[in-house]
Length: 347
Ligand SMILES: [Zn+2]
Ligand SMILES: [Zn+2]
Image (cartoon, rainbow, N blue to C red; front, side, top):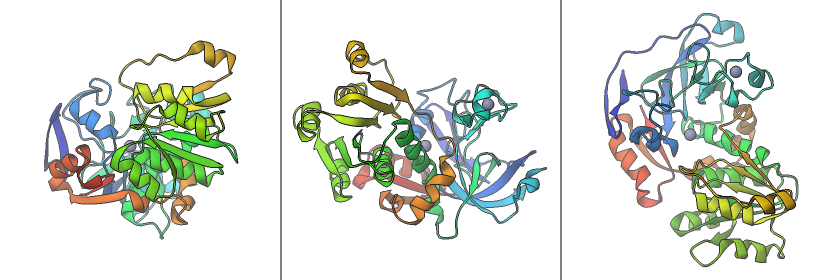
């Protein structure tokens, strides 16, 4: 089969590799669509080398959909069969540690121990390939109404819903979102779908125009102090919830600064350096800052919201390429050519 193989940081090619075989409680799938994730370029460039992945050569990719073509031992007892249409996600928790038992398999305490845990496309072989093996914990059957391309975006949509949950968004809340990329837009859609009163997206340039086109209130951060702008449009009070999707230290600082007293900030963007936060203000105003890692149970929950159009994943898909043209897909995605948002790769 064909697979994208990253030989060393920044050096990759699409070449022939052996088809993997499904083990116990795993399925082998024919991959139909893969969405390029913002994390993929970091993995390819070696920004998290030694961790994601543990070593090169490596095949990344974790946002995908396809068809089950072989079922490993025991998977049939859980209702899996050849022909199932599926969408994949990256985390397969051990299922036994305290966090997994509590349903928080995204923070499994056996993370990284490959004998009992997987994170596909991060440290376990990913899906930029004709076929991929996944644990049955990491594949979800998709409804007939959902096409493969939309289904490949279910993983980030699930992360967006998890972000909104971690932010504690309540009906009627004012919610600010930093980072108008795919994750920011999906988070805005989920905030609206779960009852936010107002959704304000902060950013700049073409991506912010896209957000405006989708009907959101926006703040252009290139036009003066964004914190002051958010305070002004919220009667001087700030927002109940801020959701940080940019991964930049500065935008996390804005998020904390624009919270209303008692407010909460959930952070899904991963800053590559430390960030100074105003601890005194956080103590005295009872502000909360919480992390968000992937999703935990939201893959299934997000499907009806995508099917009925409340989460418009189709509006985010801008480009399509064959797997053999991955280099071009990667360039268009990383250089944001022609307003690229979600770029789909078809093995
Ligand atoms: Zn992703
Ligand atoms: Zn676990």
